[in-house]
Amino acid sequence: MKRLLLHLFVSLSTSGLALGFIFFAASLTPSLMPRSFFVQGALSGIAAAAGYLLGVTFTCFWKYLELPMPAGRRLAGNMVVCGLGAALSVLVLWRTADWQNSIRDLWHMERVDTAEPFSVAFVAIVAFFIAVLIGRLFRLTCLFLSEWLSRFVPRRVSLVIGGILAIALFWSVVNGILLRAALHLADRSFQRLDALLEDGVPMPSDPARTGSAASLVTWKGLGRQGRSFIASGPTATEISDFWKTPAREPLRTYVGLNNAETIEERAKLALEEMKRQGAFDRSFLVIIAPTGTGWIDPAAMDTLEYLHDGDVASVGLQYSYLASWLSLLVEPEYGSASARALFREVYGYWTRLPRQKRPKLYLHGLSLGALNSQVSADIFDIVADPFQGALWSGPPFASRMWREVTAAREPQSPAWLPRFRDGSLIRFTNQTNQLAIPGASWGPIRIAYLQYASDAVTFFDPNSFYREPAWMRHPRGPDVSPSLRWFPALTMLQLLVDVAIATSAPMGFGHVYAPAHYIDGWIAVTDAKVDAERVEALKRLFAQRSAPGGGND
Image 1 (cartoon, rainbow, N blue to C red):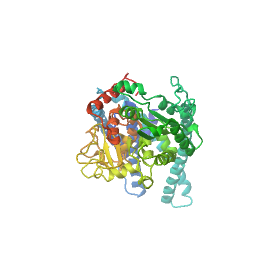
Image 2 (cartoon, helix red, strand yellow):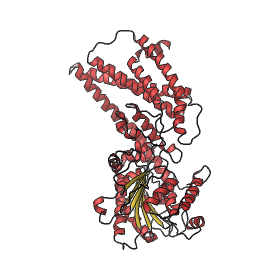
Image 3 (tube, rainbow, N blue to C red):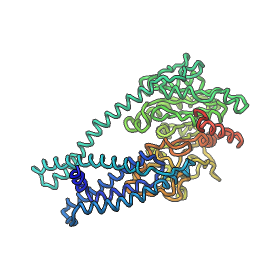
Image 4 (cartoon, one colour):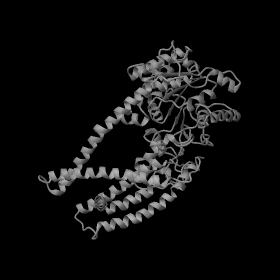
């Protein structure tokens, strides 16, 4: 056993170990999200493996060029590198708690006394060696293929072709077998979850509600998220009791995947259900693009319905039951096609109504819903008769319109809070209301982006592999750690992990948007005339509901 371990140790690349320890140390520095010991350990192990791979690749390239290798025994070199690397690791592990607290302090979270360095190190070592074993399997495949090819082509050519073939083989296995099997399993799981009829969510008895006995849309076909959207939300009585003024019953329309066969049929069904409910008789009408699972953020719609005394109708169309990242990966066109179809049906009917009597029309979407909502309307189709505005929260980094507007921002404004031209069309806001720009006047369309500087879903940047993202430059967002540093390749890996855990943030940070910030956004977008005391009372209500044990919103 000792001989086997010694052989394994000696076989490790000295340059790979050196870069592996450097990547491990750098991975412990903060990014956008605080991390548990398991997430940190997994990230650090993969980061160390990435550094090791880079070192091995450099050595292989050096040998490929037939340049002289440094003289000396690998065992001694590895021992020296491991000794120095261990010292560096102890130093950075000791600092990890402070780095994590640099985020937690900004987010008003409880500080941690320790980042559990032994647990982090154990998970990292396991993740590192699993990655190295996979890498060695890939190397053996390359050597086997190149050895066979060397009988027909020169050795250097066979090495290149063998590497390309090995990459193609591994990719086909991962993409064609493992990934498809995982996606199939996830698809079946989400489908069953979507079809689940929850206890405590009864079919509505009010005939005006979607899914009731009088509805054109069946209750069961709405899906889990659709039923939750219809059953939740404030009633006219609750709104009236809070404001001590008369209120209307908010109207919510939703059509699930199982309510009709095609996207077009679901969109037409949604329009007919809206007409049945009297949605076009309200003062405000919102077309919502849900997230991948069909979820609609209650913080967005509940606040709007309270703000306007229930005189609001809203409509959503489910296009998937997968989580947003899975939906974006396996069926990216469904969301945009669904958003376009719904907008086309609703907008087409809305434009035929008398302008003096029809409701004001708005768009909304969170996360993947924001991405799809942004492409739902073609400017050439609506320029003659535009809708009134949109509130998009947590727009994903892949949002084309968001990227273009951010890139064209005023030079003095930061990337995490851009100022676009004169502010008459598009404005950005975050935890503090930034929508009242001195000297700026809104135009006929009001578009607001609600985004947090700590939201990795919005600020992930693939180009961070080789350059520092603009949002990392000073001044930084108020919820971003001052200890965050950019590292080539590694920062992109850190941000990928941040994207995966972004919804685990406390409310008001990361990818979890707070009702109070929606309130400010809706006031600006809908041009609501409300006094400051009313606004503060509404914010207190939702703050109480959002507190632990305070409610379901």
